[in-house]
Length: 125
Image (tube, rainbow, N blue to C red; front, top):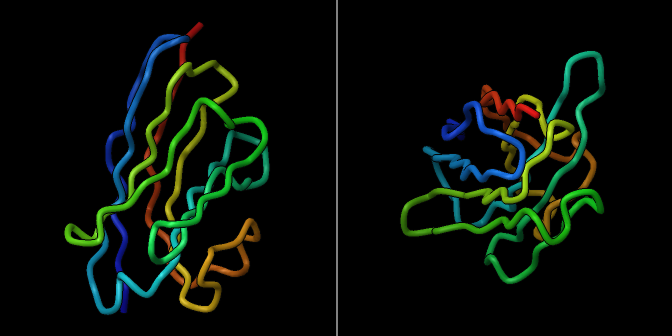
């Protein structure tokens, strides 16, 4: 059983930065692709970024390209999401997720097997 715990959320002013972390416990972290998703109040959960099991392949939602960077440290069983140039539209609960079925990860949240509890990111204008 894989457990994921996000941290690093908080309140930040527009234009600021945050780095989210997702620490994993359980077997075979290095064989799992990871993804970040977010859900704003009243909206569906949406894809943000994904990273392959090796870290060699990443993919981003269009609305975060050039602002967010996903990375992973397999020695620490942790995936990160560096978020720069934040704006109020980025306010949401951010979730990390893991999948073994899709080695490059996926933009489809149904393709993930394990989810963290989420961390709140609030961007003030």
